[in-house]
Length: 326
Ligand SMILES: Nc1ncnc2c1ncn2[C@@H]1O[C@H](COP(=O)(O)OP(=O)(O)OP(=O)(O)O)[C@@H](O)[C@H]1O
Image (cartoon, rainbow, N blue to C red; front, side, top):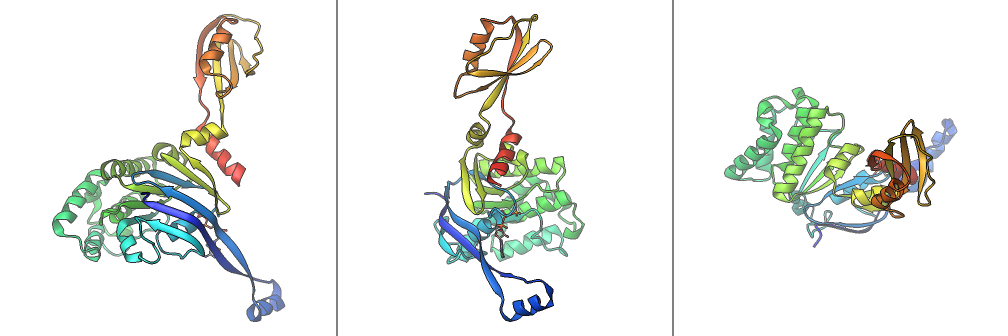
């Protein structure tokens, strides 16, 4: 059974249109003009336990609205959600016990407490027994190095330390599913690395399911086994990164270094796209011809010294997702 099931999900917001000028403002006050915005517009997908899923899309696509419904903060206008078999709206308490949630842009830690005091507080809120709590803290320290600043008040933590603290806090009750909203935003390279290692370790060792919204292409490439791409509240792509890249950027480049000058042949299933001295580049679609076929064809007609096949750029492919759906 999937750990997250979303069926025909819709969320509408009622927004009041403000009129300009004094008379407009008075009219809006007495007779507000309302319109409906569909933040999420008929989403359906399942997520299996142990997956790391990237939930991506341009600004205003409906990502946060979806996450808020999955975590029970918002009520759907239509549709059905199950998280660990439960409704996040009807069984909010039981679902919250299964979830960890981290928002990169704002901390859930208590600003005035020391980090360790926050963890103690969470231990009581979730009624975790002391032995289990100590074991979890050991694991979290190993992956996140939190003891180095556990006695520091949260307000004095650096952004990277604060994020590590937030991740640890979200794990105290050993959730099955972790929702991460832009977890690496604003972090330096070292802190980003620590966050990504943490996600991979928890996923590998605890089969923790992770749903991640991010605009960071490295997060997508390094972490996500599957991408759900949304725009205008609808699902526009669903699949592994490779498949999405293959669909949006199907071309490969074959770079050939010649031994000496030669007449460059045309090829029916590849096009000559660039030449620099003795180096030439042929572009080909891997569904039309394999690299080895093309190499065999060209090496029969050209004096080849060296060659390499260049894969499409993942960053371009993901940008393409944003462009074509934006
Ligand atoms: N409380 C609200 N009232 C009215 N409209 C809203 C509300 N919350 C979200 N929306 C609208 O719903 C749509 C989806 O918003 P949402 O915040 O889910 O997008 P997002 O994909 O998370 O964007 P971002 O990447 O910028 O965070 C947008 O058009 C947004 O303006």
